[in-house]
Image 1 (tube, rainbow, N blue to C red):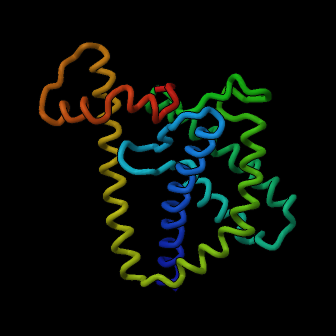
Image 2: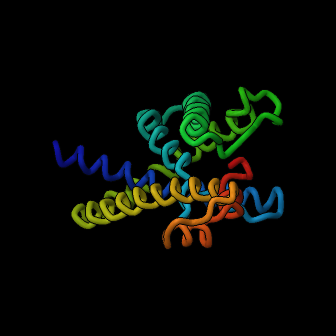
Length: 210
């Protein structure tokens, strides 16, 4: 029973990773088609990880896996509501903690505080149907075939990597703000941040909202 629980948690972890990467690709493709520009929609400075898609996929999996055979209308409504709440909360806490949010829908019709809008909530509803009806069953079947020990070890590696990536991202944002204030780097690490993850790089990541 414990091993089944651990394996299910492992599957959820890989769903988070895969959906984060897929979200990065979807956002990038959408921006390229809509605006003709390439934007790095990652939440961290190293790697293609759009975390809101990862968290949304895990949330939808937990909420909807029992409704896999339910009507698409029911799945749409549940996805619409749950992901809208998630997007609002992530925007709110991102602004609370970092002082900015990576998206702003204030110019979209029927938005709430610029954090969510009807258009994107509808998109979440559709993505929920696609996810739980078509993607989730196939992905879980693939993940269930992985070697448990190998899966755990790689999950540990990815967790450590993402934690370090998160620390570097926070450091890069802090250093870029100081650079814009004319404060020179104090050490080699800050020089590295100035050259590699400067304001231009961060503004591209966060849609100029940084």
